[in-house]
Picture 1: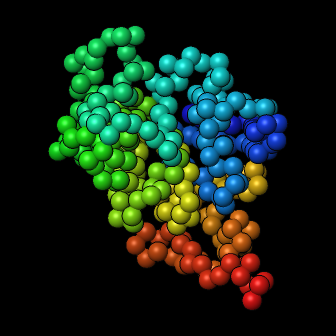
Picture 2: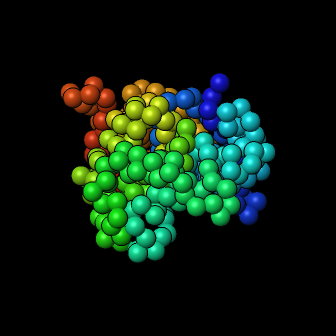
Length: 266
């Protein structure tokens, strides 16, 4: 049985459809990346998968149950969400931030207990921030801040983690660090990971499957090493280029040459 599934999902803003009849089925332990040009509906689809946006039509099923019929607390105990834009006071420590992840497992106004503290410390250790546990979030680098947010999600003890552009605003070193860490968490904790990525080559390298969107429609949902072709990149992004094979991991990667708009205007 899929852990998360969209069935005939239609989503709209102000009654204007932005996702049309989407179907996607995600199994336990998979890493799924959603790609597509700006405005194609990537983040909107992600919102529907994690119950941040109610569909006009269709269903999102979490472990076979309609996600909108489940208690919020129950959803939060199995599904963690990291949006692209996150807000927190800069004088909150790493330990305090990660502690917020325990709220789905606590009773109202109950202080954190020994088990909570153990989970918090394990989450911080999992993202290798144990040397920064009492530092303020505002004093961390961008990559360290992103790891702290991921630790907060881990403190929920989720089976599924959903991330919207987890490498945005990071330099190439920190991008690689985050992607490798997500793969390690997927492997070590058998965690299903679903994320929106702008970098097609990152998506191919680190994902099991890729969902490609264009103009609000899923045009492909296939294995990562099979979905990317020169024709598909041209169709999705309006870019001409070539596909090569990475000698280190045998995955394809794309080298762009020119945009079709540039070619037409030249």
